[in-house]
Length: 610
Image (cartoon, rainbow, N blue to C red; front, side, top):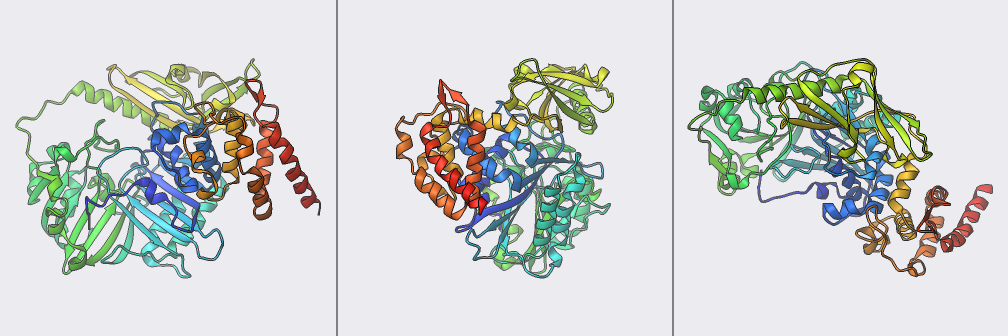
């Protein structure tokens, strides 16, 4: 049922099924790491391989993957929980349109973690396939202990009642946005919501039914099923939520959580469970999430699961909801749990989960600390002040204004607030675009007096609405960093072209990008070009000068003209953007290619004239 030896990778879950290609997707997350988001399009569009560093260094593959996916993938994330990467990347600016920051309507947080992906047969012979991922992890690089459920199915003709709450949440996502949502993104949620409502999911072996539970849209507490036995897995817990769960069962068997969480519970709450368990030290890693109870450093357990045994059946609930008042009892957070029901003889139950063949070998009995450490009142107050300042910045109506600088290649960026506001209890707030290093950060204090802070003069490719904030408390070692996706006024029209020129860099990079632009599937492009080849965004090309004549450009251009002529229009736009640009005294677009391209451009014009 929950087998620790059955591991899954985010990238594997996003890979298209054999014979199908990615069409579109919606994802939801509490916290969001731009580094992770930057690499995901590679797996959706190009089946990318290699480690994270190789993928980030390969700017050309990243650029083409983003071009293919950006308009078709939308990530809804809790506002104010975007992480600030340690290093800048010129391509972060292209993530702006994909990320929509949202707020929960009832004081809590937006906390669901799911993906709804649509794959299609490129030949049009098979029906579309939906893949649904229900996760306990965020869209970040953390390596904590999480749970995931993958379901697939094809949309049918009739609505299915078990999918109603899931479909309604997807359709509702644009209404949670802090800033305006483009019509095409709204249309996407409506389209995928409708298909999800009509999909019969193929269930994991042994399970007989599935149902989705969404919390936080309405003032309605979760009513867990009455059961004979109960097991709870939750890294964060409150006494009130656990009391509600215990009232639903005859025997609260076990509570699996973090040592810090268990220590904060009342002894009476812990005593309700026959066992209170934690991950063994060897099974724990560092993670990063937060809400009502999370400290700045979190241990490795991040999975959320509730197992109810009822008669012959096992009811397994997994998803995003911790056993906290905000998630379950007050229904303040937006959360998703999926309920799977199966015969215990087929899927197992609590005893199997706690056995050596389940999680048993990874668990240890909770031992109450011999002495409780006195809380650091000053540090706790400083952390509370940082969180209050974050909430103020989240609520503020901020935007970026661009204007031409004195240098023809420079643009002045201003952070503007619609009204004055103050941040109390902090010593400094620094701000800088995500595309540059923190060395270019400026003090935000001036914004509190005149609603306008000059961020500096930047090249077009560095302009972005993804803005980093660092808040420093009165205790210098207590800091908080996050990023916001802010609207940009006056974005220069050449920004995206400047990003492309920065990534391609030289003629060999142009040729490599050209092949990626022409490719339909992974096997069309030589493997050496997919990762680590010349002309990346971070290093010089290393192809030989004669490589132009060794590349199958004529064959690929001819195939594109016959099968997919609109692909040539994309090449035409690329050539237009890079014409006249030079690197080390040589044109970015090789003259040999221009001679060949003129033939196809003339053919396109003749085709349009007919």
